[in-house]
Length: 139
Image 1 (tube, rainbow, N blue to C red):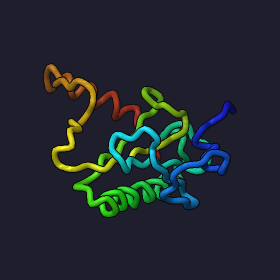
Image 2 (cartoon, rainbow, N blue to C red):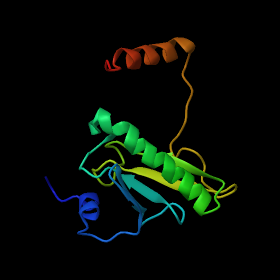
Image 3 (cartoon, rainbow, N blue to C red):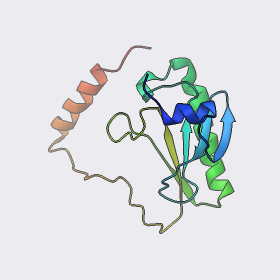
């Protein structure tokens, strides 16, 4: 495996502004925050993307993410949070991480950062829905 900055933070080889350290993962400040208080939550083992996260870890990992969303909002007196992750495309570090960004009304962040467009028709939307539904893995 090539070097992973998040694995180095988890192992203590690299410093970070730590917010939480639990068996389910760690949370620390993003060094290039969207807004001050922007937290990254990572699982402790090296897991490249959400699809690689073992099923048995999903609940505990997202429980930590949920608690961090509450902590960011409460601790910073923010109006809310923006919680997001990238998988492969635009993923700056190839280790699963969830962004928890504090939000306030009028902060200038405008929803998603890419162009939005409608489906050409309900039939087109149904086709896309059916293609995705057919690919949902069994439990």
